Structure formats: structure tokens, C-alpha cells
Image (tube, rainbow over all chains, first blue to last red; front, side, top):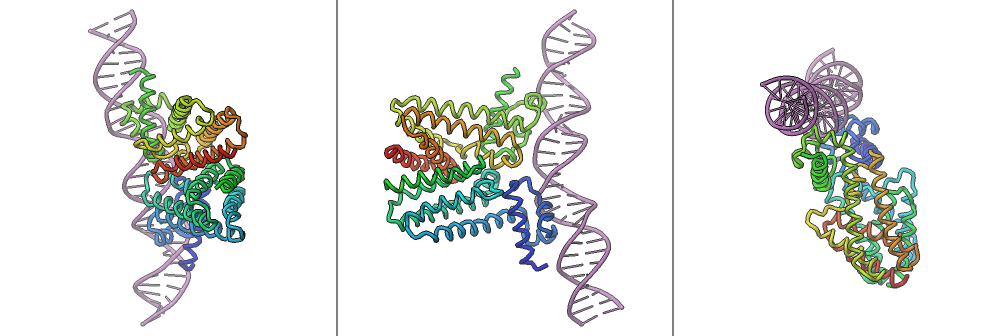
Length: 183
Length: 183
DNA sequence: ACCGTAGGAGAACGCTCGTTCTCGCGTCAA
DNA sequence: TTGACGCGAGAACGAGCGTTCTCCTACGGT
């Protein structure tokens, strides 16, 4: 098996397991079992579990933000684009297997012990916030709005994760709409 | 040492350690060292670590909601009371040792493995949401506002926890004020 | 004084799990 | 053909930790 293929399979398994059951309750042996990549190979590709965790978060970050941006691109009006973020969140929350924001979960689990993971979470959230800020700027709205929309989105993610419901997205969208209308 | 005293000391230590470093990275031996309560006593009071965790979250829940309510009671105007929630959050975020919302952290760490902890987190969040709803109702505002304020508060907690800044409280307060004004 | 009991200190046990090692097999170059 | 090498399967190692056990001390009732 090609090294690149093994890496992808390992990351696929890591993502499925870490996201679904948490990082700490998943052993490297579980990753081996799910991925079909032997322990020896796993440790060649990722010299320690923490690096597998980092690679998992990094790959997911790229995909998550890419899919969000692609969805938002589908709308024409600048303000519609902002609201589309919440529509996309709602669709995400409703997906089978949704278990909250992977980064917030990882932060709760590892933030206190792994500075590298904590930094990655902050970086992901900063990127998301800046993306919102770019949408706000494109709509010619005041910059302070971005932070407020960001908080609504974060609150929706965390609440959807804890309750398992997709409704927070609609609530956040409605609040965002009202903030836009009065901004 | 009295049994009740030992229980309080154990919970004090558990809270300091679990909140500050996460549950999984704190051993029962750490709790013993910090509390001065022997392992034997600890296991008499809490037959398993999970029950110590539950007791920690439960006691903190009572105190957290009590302090919030006491602070809010200090304001007269119904709408001021709603905004006071965010002032209180800001003061909390600024406290030394603040490390985010204890329940969200616990959920990220244990939500996937301990149904009892997950239920406790949901229960705490539901109580907070209902408290907000009661403030909204007392102000004669539409009920849908409560969910939006809740999302702002959750977003602020999670963002303050990850970034270590108290500013999200002010941002959330400003968003809340605007939602109130147009509600 | 004496015995029963509670409690503390800390060793011990058993399990999990990250990480490494062993062994055996297949492959490919010379 | 052979020998070096890569790899997979799985055992092994070692640390951490939840939980229990041992042993010793102190004290309270008779």
C-alpha cells in the first residue's frame, strides 16, 4: 500500500473515531483496526498520537472552511451570504453523526494538556471569525457586527452539539437577520 | 475530621483540579493530595471517580446559577436585568483562573463516554436557558428572544474560554442590547 | 488496661493504552 | 539463489491510574 494512501486511510479512521467518540477514548489500536493500517505504518506516518490528532484537526479544518465557503459562494447578495452561513450550519447540525464542533470538543478534552491542540483550535476559530468579518465588510456593514455574528454561530454550534438538535441554527439565523436589519 | 467537612474539602479540591486541568488528567491521588482527604475516605464518600465528577458539577451548578441570579437581582429594570447577565459573564471571564465553561469542558471531555455527565450538562444548560426565558418574560418581551440571548451567552462563554479574553462578554452584551431595542 | 473499630499512609493490583520489539513472510536486486 | 529489506500481525513493555488491600496507630467504651 502506498504511503500516501495509508496516510489518507489513517486520517479517515482517525477522523471518524476521534470525532465520534472523543480522542482519549480511542486507542491507536482502534485506529489500526478501522483504517487497516498497521501500527508500524501509523507510527512511521505520525510519530505520536498527538501528531495524528493535529493532522486530523488540520485536514478537517481545511475541508470545513472550504465547504462553508463553497456554500456561501452560491448566494449573490452580500447579506444573503451572511445568512447562508447559518443555513449551512443548520444543514451540518442535521447530518447523521453530528456531534458538535470538533474543535470545541478537542479543546475541552485536550486544551488543558496540549498547547499545540489549543493553538490549533484558536487558529481555526480565528479563521472562521475572519471569514465572517470578510463577509460583513463585503456587505458594507460595520465591523463590530462580525464579532456578534461569530458569537451567535459559536453558541449555535455548542448548543446543537450538546442538545443534538439542529434548531439553534435557525435561532441564530433569526438573531443574525435582526442584527443585520438594524445594523 | 467530620465526614461533612471531608466531603467539602474533597469537593473543593476536585473543583479546583478538575476545572483547572480537566477531569481526565487529574487522578484520585491528586485529589487526595490537594484535599488532604485520604483515598479510603474519598472512596467512602464517592464510590467512584465519576460520582465525584458528578458531585463537583452539581455543586458548581448551584453556586454558578445562584451567583448569577444574585447579581441580576441587583438591577431594577427588567431589561437591565437581562443585560446584567452579560455583565456578570464579563466579570466571571476576567477572574483569575477562568478556563471556560466547566460544563462545556466536561462535555467535550466526557460527553461521549459518560451519559450521566452529558445529562448533567444538558440539565445545567436548560436551567440557564429557562432562567433567561424568565427574565425575558418578566420584561414583557417575545419568548423567541430567550433562545437568541442564550446563544449569545454560550458563544461568549466558549469564545472567552478558548481565547482567554473577557471581551466576548461585551460583544455579546452589545448584540443583546440591539436585539432588545428592536424586539 | 484492653479490645474493637475507624482512619491514615501508602503499597499493591489490574487494566488500559501509547509505544516499541519480535518474528515471519514476501519482494527485489545482484 | 540469496540476502537485505519492508511490512504486517501481534506480543511485549512501561507508565499511569482507578480501586482495593495491608498494616499500623489512635481512640472510645467497659
